Image (cartoon, rainbow, N blue to C red):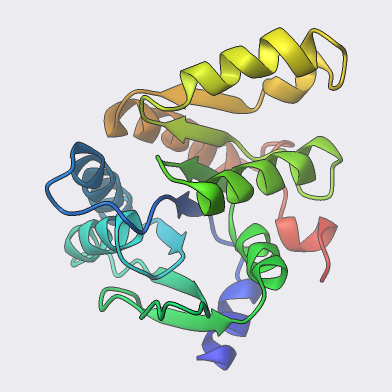
Length: 213
């Protein structure tokens, strides 16, 4: 599996990372939205990158597996070793387990050309903020960061009212963060990013050339 991941890293392909809670079950509305998003990405022959575990990671991978039956798109799983064992879900095609969050997040960034952040807890917030910071300081290319779901608008409001108002970051730092209520709006943003990537748009350069680990 390590060799397979290295092979994926060498490819200049458009991929979407999907972050979200491992604690959300199949009956949750967020699970259904992420399943739909994964399915639409699979149908478009776009690879996804998730944490490989349960919850929304499974929803994305399960939907992607259904959607990619005709296209053959891959679901890449980057798992993390935790005290409470988190097993790989069965829907991933390329798998690798990490012992440190930092190296795992670095690999997410190397692989991804767009990021979707679904509802989640501390781990999901870490993934969002890590991605945002790397884009801010230009350690990765300016990829779109899509916050999907109802839990994010209040966070953006807080960011505007406090850190931004106090000039702790610049207005342009918010420009690559998008809010999306559902999977349909999310896929429209991804489709636009994908088109620009295929056309060689300046904002979608190959991450591997700018970001080394």
